[in-house]
Image (cartoon, rainbow, N blue to C red; front, side):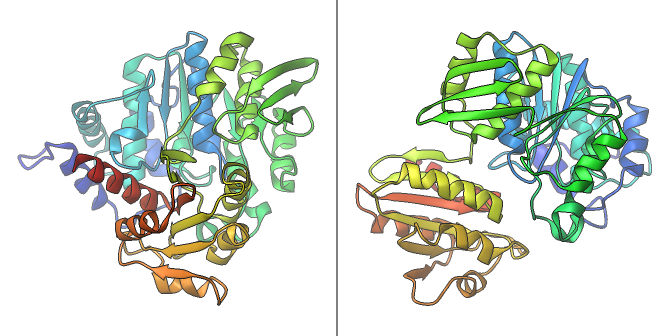
Length: 419
């Protein structure tokens, strides 16, 4: 460490942003070299690695809360964060302080030598170091991008999960589900159990699982959900868990988590399972922010996630006027996202989060059909306030799109509460 070494978490994060020539540099050679020096492949006695286009964060949250209810000490690492970097790692359900992250960054800085690491690679190694030091029972690791070449794939998982395979990040993962499935199947391990949340997985996932003799459980084949209004049943082989409350996450993600813990012999008793599902929440996923009007935010930013969001809004906003505030990155399928929500939304506010990769409001407008009632706001916060001002007490206002959009809405809500 030099005399000008970072001292605060903000200083460390600024340092990490300029450490490597590109923000994303797919490949495991560099991150593996540093991880091997610190023996980070097995940061806990039991490691679960979770990949997928959508549903990774919600599946990780379900695993975490169910495992804690079963008496296990847990660590969860995921990304991106909404308001604070500290959100990326939870030990026993709690975020760590700035000092913990700074100490872990210093450890990685000392261990990396002249190896160049991206922001995400450096952060992943630091998180694994913190998990190892915490001596938890189970580490739940969320893949950042893809799987095969993602920094998280240096770990040695006891169980792998692929939630969904759909189109997103095509510039890095390929332009069709087979190509993307090949990348996500890279987290599977020979002879190890895996849970796949896809009812129709790409051939590449099926082929890789067969090649590795993976002990797989497939949604729609080995386990399923039977939904009855606000209650549902989980079915897996002869196992039937009935009268389950509907959680505030997709049922398939809850079912994937339950199936994974059944395989590991760590599912809590039925009465405890029901209690956990009834209160299961995750920030930024259909997160309620207030009533009259009902205010919601969601990080849906690809067509697959938008279709799920639309199905939930049909239920939550039935018979009510729906106003939408949306901001996304320019490389997303803007028209595909809008298509899922067009039949539901009465009025649109288009916004651009404050970063270069964001789609402009003009780009968003071009992806919408002509003839709609559309406002182009100068900022996320202004668009959010304009939508709230236009809403009646019986309306629903949804802010959705990129994590950055949701983060700026959450910040605006915090700022308003402070006034």
